[in-house]
Amino acid sequence: MNRFFNWHSNLDTGIKDIDVQHRQLVDYIDELYQAVMSSDIDAASKVKQVVGKMYVYAATHLTDEEELLKRINYPTPDFDKHIAEHDKFRAKMRDFEYSVQNGYPVTFQVVQFLKDWLTDHIKQTDMGYAEFMKQNKLM
Image (cartoon, rainbow, N blue to C red):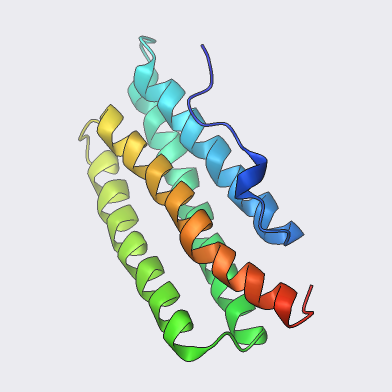
């Protein structure tokens, strides 16, 4: 089966640790897509497994990113907006993980949402702090 979500260089922030984490999230979203689209008998079990891994990893990544923003003294209005986006995503991921663990099926629309959210967040929000770091010679 073809990949649903491929990493593209236009998603690179230039911050090695963050880019590695973003790539892992891309891989988890692709793995989730493969499980959702699978006709295997154990597909539901695989979906639960992937969602569990992705939930924990996403939480770790968001925390790591927020710690980075604090270390670089990212300006308050942008910092607050970034944290608010993370908080909304955390809430969605909690709901999503809870639903999956309680037997609700994952639809293609959920997988598409995850792909779109991550892509938009990297391109529109994360690139902001990457640019801030470049301008201030922090990387």
